[in-house]
Image 1 (cartoon, rainbow, N blue to C red):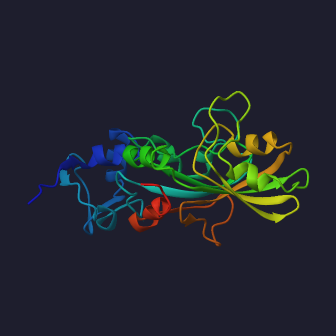
Image 2: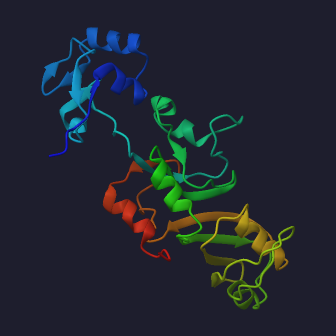
Image 3: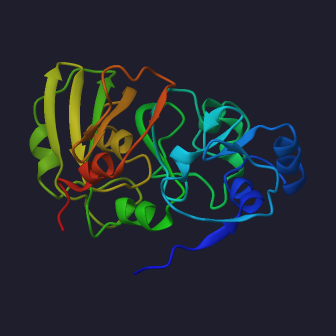
Length: 248
């Protein structure tokens, strides 16, 4: 039988971003921490790190935030930056402020550039982050692009050839699937994550991306009711959809 590790309540809440040990002690004195229906008075008490803590503990009247392994899906709006330190609107501004202070950090899984919108994952699970972004797994990413000029008809074959070279690079891109939606709109499925790849692919065939939206990672898609700037928590079944189309 596997022994469940234990931790101090104040240490646990501190790692989830609720505050310093002193601040968490103040929250307890204000009778704002409840475990199994009882007010917590001693935050130095050690408790098992069981997954059901999120159901058994509340802080400020709300369920405890997810423990390590948290995965957030956001419908990122254009104009927001996937960074903690840059100036300007940040994706972290759209999340509860305490999540900036989680340890391990909540990090974006493959950044979307400032002007790209759509599906963005954030997690504190390092192994999951590296697995999704690993070139070996080749997780498929689906984008919808609005273009400055009408498509000329050759782009589907060029992108699928596996021979397209991006400016300044020495290795051709993997084959990519382009679906034409209208003369100036297309859906593109890629399995790489090179710097500004989609924008540079269209630039390589003489076009310009005016708007770019990520629709899916693997079989994980944005729910229709998840509006721009909104987010939701994912469970293990949701996360598994990311790998549904991967190569291994």
